[in-house]
Length: 131
Image (cartoon, rainbow, N blue to C red; front, side):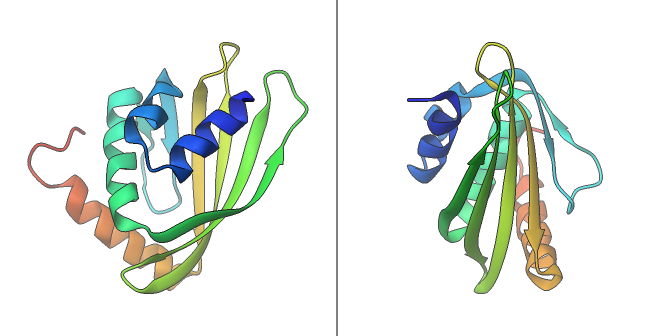
């Protein structure tokens, strides 16, 4: 399986342990609904755990892989959050060792993005969720 295929397969399987294995220890996660990026495997894993819970009917619809060395990948997805349909894009950057070093997520439309921000924010504030 290619490096980009490994991350996609783990997400589609909703296998948090497999997703975590694809992440570089120094990964940086960016989102338009968060002011500051999440840094580090533990923080990003905690956020991805919440996203796996919040997204309903998540599925990738398109997959674009660069020819760079290392490659990067754009995964277009559709999902629902609290009944609101949304579209999004995962921009995945890989390091020399094949691990995900950067993940930028963009979502639309704005009402669904705001619903996502509220749902994720509440769960991330729960006791026991790593920063």
